[in-house]
Structures are given as C-alpha cells and as structure tokens.
Length: 325
Ligand code: AQP
Image 1 (cartoon, rainbow, N blue to C red):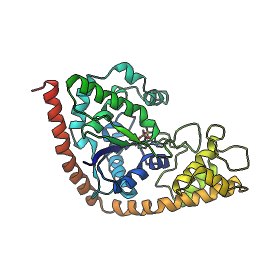
Image 2: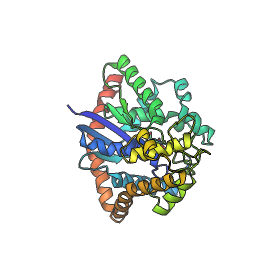
Image 3: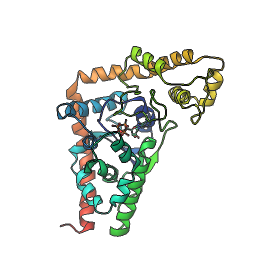
Image 4: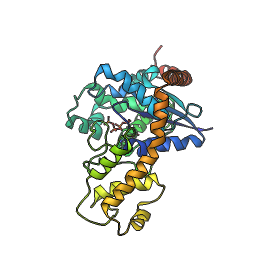
C-alpha cells in the first residue's frame, strides 16, 4: 500500500527561498512518487504568533494560492486548510495528556521565538503537539520538512510511541524527508535561519527580478575573493553556493570548480538570474490564481472533503481506545 505523506505550510507571512528549497520544491517532486499525500495550510499554527486578525484570512488564502502556484496539484495531492478539519484540534487534546510540559519547554523553536519577542502563550508551547496531531490524524508515515522541524518531528514519534504503548498499536512513527538544503540561512545574517517572521534577509517567492537582484547583491558574504564552500568558516558565500546548487541540480563542489577565478559580484549576478528564472513561472501562476479565487476555494473545499473521513476514522478509533463514549 502507498505510504502516507503529510506536510504543512504556516500562513505567517510570504513563502521564502528557505521554505521552497527546504520543503516545497521537494513536495512538488514527490507528487510523482507513489504516496498518498496530504498538504495543509497550518492556520491554527499561525495563530500562535503575533498577528493582525484583519489580515489573517488574506494570509491563509494566499498561502494556499502560493502552494498551488508552486506546483502542488489537487489532482495528485489532498490540499486543504488545517482548521477546516476539527479532528486536528481534537487529537491535540488527547495528545496533550501524554506529553510532558518539560519536553515542550526544551523545544529550540519555542525558546527562539520567545527570545525574538513572541508572547510565550500556551499555543506557542503546544505547537509541537498540534503538529503531531496534524500528522498522526492521517497516520502519516513520511513528512517532507526543513531541518528546523526535526526536533518537533522527533516529539511526534515519541507521542506516537507513548500512545501505542499505553492504548495499543494505533500510530506509525513518522519519518522526515529532508532535502539537500534543509536549512537555508538569512541573506542578511548567514548564522540565522531564513524565517518568514524576520523579513530582513528573506528572499520571497513573490520578489520581482529587480528585487531579487538587489537582495542577492546585498547578501552578506566575507572579505575573501574566491567562491568556495565551507559552511562553518564561510557561511555567507556557502549559503549562496548551496542555493545555486539546489536550483541547478548541481553540487557545491561542482560549482566551486565552475566559478574558479570568478568574483563575488559576477557570481551573485548569475545567482540572481538563476533564482529569477526559477520563480518566474510561480509569479505568473500566482497572478492567474489570484484572478480566479473561486477556483482556489473549490480546490480547498474538495481537499477538506477528502481529508475529513480519514481524520474522522482515526479520531473514532482514538476515542474508543482512550475510553471516551
Ligand atoms: N530557512 C529554511 N531552510 C529550509 N527549510 C525551511 N523551512 C522553513 N524555513 C526554512 C521549512 O519550510 C517548511 C514550511 O515552513 P512553515 O511554513 O511550516 O514554517 P516555519 O518552519 O516556522 O518557517 P519560517 O519561515 O521560519 O516561519 P516563521 O518565521 O513564521 O516561524 C517547513 O517544512 C520548514 O521546516
């Protein structure tokens, strides 16, 4: 039987190159493999961060538009909005009772977000439990994610194991599918992950050719002259080389050879051209989808209709096993 694949995108801002190379590009490619796929827009997760209620609906809808524009195909994948399937929240509550608070407070992303000034609300702390429910409500076995989500995914595995031990075998222990670029760094600070919530240093999928050129030209590198790949010692240029490699299906080593004797300015200009070429079709698809909003609404409704019976069946089984009537 085809393995079950689950992943999500949080509508907390515009998609960036990190989201694309860490997860989305691979999600599109995986549509050609024999999985049963569930992709959702993680609107509940986005409420854990500071946000403006008047802008949230637009953000959620546009994240769905962006996922479709990047190539997620409703004929191959079930695409829907997280909060439209109430079982995500229901299962979170069950999982809350088998998860230790100590483990949640040790999550690196929680600590980072609080250090960045996010309110340490219970939702932010509970984020990884909701993530476990997102995956396990579909009995997900594989999860395409970036490296930042690995610790959360490990907790999903722990939750699945704990539940199975206590209530009987119910859930698989989901595994990550990582890309060769699982952590793209900020263009402004190559020691920090590129993140939607820190827009400085982000290269957005919606950026025009001109903006891409300006941002890549301004990307922080170092005072060396030659192109090389050494993420530890030369994180700035290495981040750019990795981006180039991923977008051209080559390897950093091949690129270091190819650009021998070429200066940073010329390399950056070439990289900007490669990025723009990759994202041009995305920008065009996005424009078309935004002009046909009812089509997107229908796709999301159809996706929820496909996802709901699967989630309901899991929740019915869980209710029985934990002793609810
Ligand atoms: N910098 C990154 N490099 C590689 N992969 C990344 N991902 C995120 N940042 C990078 C992966 O992209 C997928 C979608 O991410 P998300 O929407 O679930 O939210 P996130 O992981 O919290 O991403 P951001 O951009 O950092 O958002 P904010 O700032 O709002 O928290 C995930 O698979 C993620 O691993």
